[in-house]
Length: 185
Image (cartoon, rainbow, N blue to C red; front, side, top):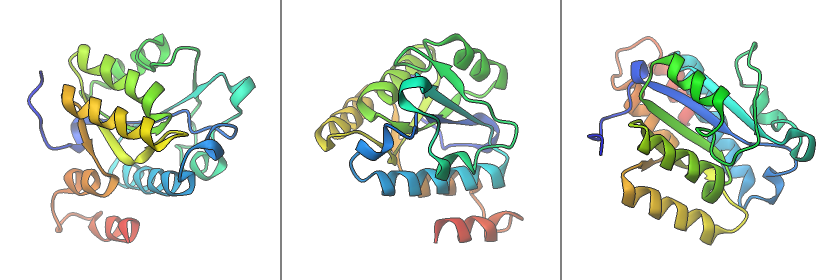
């Protein structure tokens, strides 16, 4: 198992998993999950952390919800997948490998399916997944809670958006600090 490290701007990439129009309304506390995801996306942009996003079967589940899509990089195109695990899908795996970053920050849905399987396979491949608990969701709270407990038990870092943002920024004397404070308020 990889030694746990603080999240680092130079080692991290953010993966936004399947936050789609026909899925998110069914997620428990979906407005809170979307709000946390938006904070993480704003911080990633401010700090220069690369962002990937996936869509599972967009013909059936629709595109990424507008509240999230509007914060994605302007040239971002969804990595369309048919597998539950993002890592099992070649475009996602190639994008993460090409980025050369070993810490993968995971947000999205559903926590007990696509997020969990992605985190488990990232661990197997020697990556350090950070599952941002307030920015992942499932239709049932019990499924989300079980997934987070399982992931924590096998070595994934289960934390929150605000916690990881402050790990990324680390210091109050950096130019982005005021912007980060505005994001977390």
